[in-house]
Length: 224
Image (tube, rainbow, N blue to C red):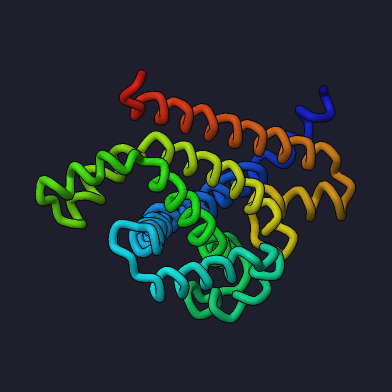
């Protein structure tokens, strides 16, 4: 226990910076999931052959692209996107570059979850809105998304906890964050205490994210 405390004192600034880098990566990733993944998921739902506004060719094309992106192992995607990351954020290493790759990974992942969540909305509610003359935009904003909100928040929580772990994997290629710190000091320099503290912080982040997500789901669920 004393050794762990001494490690915290010695590497405290490094642990704090690594935690902030992890927050940056996950924060940008979740923003990308909401801002870009949600509309993509809505489009997949609406354009499906059995959707509200079928566009088979559009759904097939979008579905193919989503599946193609999801098929790449994340570590390979990180390497493939190095030139693009350098173009977008001016560097191929560090948390900003990793956030670009994480965003590419999260958008198709979350879009599929959104599509599935919208499928679970009772069709009768949508039909009722259409019979009342609601436009497609009104149906999406006033019926589909509000009714699916608890499920969407649950999916976002699952995505966030999973991509906290992905951010640690990104540390294997110098992306910064807790994973990078654990590898550089805990593995290469045999500083076991640093690795233990990184695991503890990751555990706290995941548990806190899950608690917050569960709370938001309960607050948004009309049945409770």
